[in-house]
Length: 300
Image 1 (cartoon, helix red, strand yellow):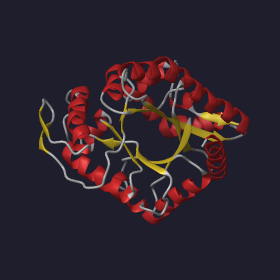
Image 2: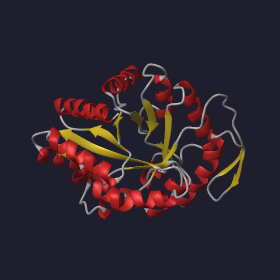
Image 3: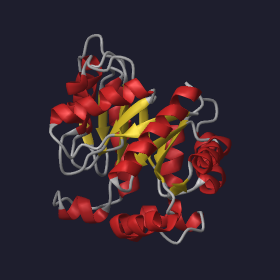
């Protein structure tokens, strides 16, 4: 199992690029960028270019509703060329409050929307012409991006339909707000069953973690900072399936030995990568990244 690092992009772009350079130096397998309220993730990845020439680079995730799939395919292939084939494209529909409140778009049949989006995106990334006239997506045409191979495509997924799509029509899944038991019981079986007859799917699990001597303080911090995630239906589903009350129940908090055991449980559950988001006071975050980098180097 590999270990990747979530990149904190709420800083000037040169500092974001330096974080990726540091992540490569520490041995992380991939550096992951999200679509939030700051830098555009694919453009930020292109900005990394050859500054960190060995580390994988991924999006977790680009929101499908805000981009036409042909536009997203062109953006992804451009970034793929800029980083010489090291991109992994993670996509997802986001959540109703964001889609309607931030983008002013109707949240209509999100499962159908993602499926139709992938029906355009996947062949377009591979240089094939598309003609899709769906309920939520219409696309006709293709792209020309010489020398840019199609990046692996991962879907953000928590419920049955999206997990099936991740295995059936993509190269795997990105999931979060769960624990190793939830990954083993719900995520891995669904994705692998849907991928039957195809290459083994990637199972990337986002984890929040901190090396700390005060796990309860860490739990309280996550409850305060991320508690709203527990009110979003897709995340709520993952939490309920794993028997967890809220995001605070997913944190890996404790000593280095305790965190190493927790990471191993994800590997045993079938995860192919854990994606670290370090939290807590600055010193704890720094030690957590250092420690997970040591684990990453040991598993490389």
